[in-house]
Image (cartoon, rainbow, N blue to C red; front, side, top):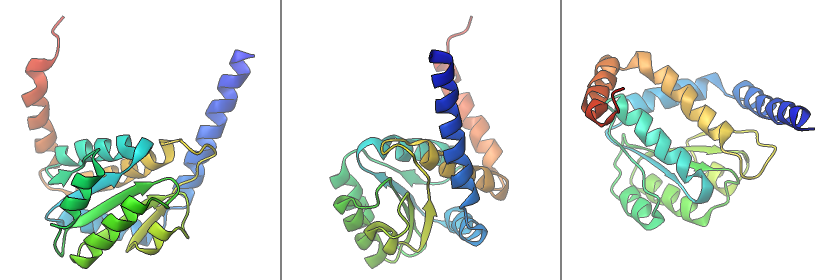
Length: 184
C-alpha cells in the first residue's frame, strides 16, 4: 500500500526530527552559536554520506558572511584542521561518531586550540568524547541525514538574527548568482 507506506515514512522522519529537537541542550546551542558568530574560520567536515550535510552547512553559513570551508576529500579536511587557531571552530558530522578520519581531525583541531563541535547519533562515541560541544541526532536508519541537517538548520536560524549584516550578505549572494537563473 503506497499511501500507507508514505505516511509511515513521514511519521518516522517526523519522530526523528522531534526527538532530535527535544534533545538539544539550550546552553550548548547558545555556546555554539556564540562560537560560530565569533569564529575566524569554520571548518565543516564529514566522511561518506554525511559529506552532503557538511557541504550544505558551508553553503548556508557562507551566505551569512562567515568564513567557512568543507571538502569531500578527507586529506584536505585534515590538512585544513591543522591550520585552525584558537577562536576557530570545526564542526564534525558523523552518524556513528566512530570515523577514524574525523577523530584525527578533531584531535588536530584541538591541538591547534580550535573549538570542536560534533553532530552525531552516539553521544558516547569516540568522536563525541573529543568534542567541546555535542549535538545528538536521532536516526531510525543508519544512513539518514535528516536529523543532522536539522541541527544545521537550527544553528543557522539562531545565527541569522545574531549577525548584524547577514541579510545583506544573503542579498548580495543572490544578486551575484541571479545571472545564472533562467528568466521565463
